[in-house]
Image (cartoon, rainbow, N blue to C red):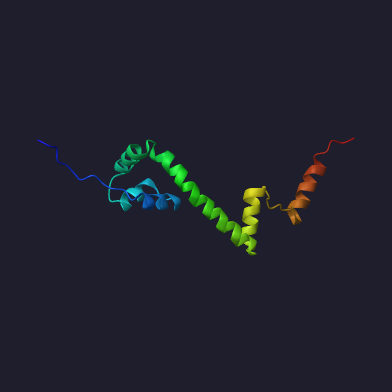
Length: 118
């Protein structure tokens, strides 16, 4: 007697790729296809012979590239906040603050008072 069970879930690979590009989680993706996370992992292993993590890493990279491109476009269009943020993230730039007022005077006094007498 043939085994009957739940019908095999078919995955729309274009939809799955788009969900990965949007950086949806495995739980989100399983919910989208109305199945368990284990099912998604098994299908990817069966069809592509790689793990979900490997598949996701490849497909989500395109989403990160698109996001970086859009940030760059916004910055180059003159968005000062985005220019500053990208400068800090990609160029290692940082805000530097000088010590002012009473704190500076206190620090100078401590330094002066701690010098050994000659």
